[in-house]
Structures are given as C-alpha cells and as structure tokens.
Image 1 (tube, rainbow, N blue to C red):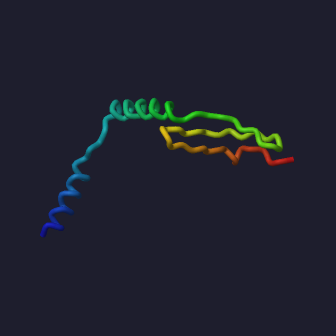
Image 2: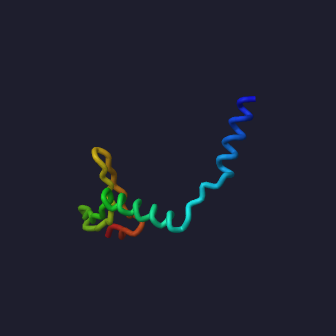
Length: 77
C-alpha cells in the first residue's frame, strides 16, 4: 500500500505543473549566463604544425576542463 501511495504522490507532483513564466525563465537564463561567464573562457591554441584551434576553458575552484573545436580546425599540410 505504501508503494502505491508513494507512486501516486510522485505522479501528482509531476502533474501539478511547476511551470515557469516567461519572465521567470528569462531571469533564470540571465543568472545562468552570469555564472557561466565567471567560469568559462575562450582561448586559441597553436599546434606545432602551425594549426590554430579555438578552445573553451572551464575553471571552478580546483575543477576545470578544456573543450576544443577540432571539427573546424584545418587539416595538417
């Protein structure tokens, strides 16, 4: 019985509609963009063969990462 009650409560939660208005959605996007701008940067890396690759860097405390656009990088000569 408890399991059916939990399933029903969960379904009711999702059906209830926690929809955001357009103004709320726009404000949320602004906050996300501000937060992302603090942690994401753009850089260009030149390889030994002279090719330049555009990369995004992510830094947040001790965590970080690098994502490069290899698809639009010219092939080596």
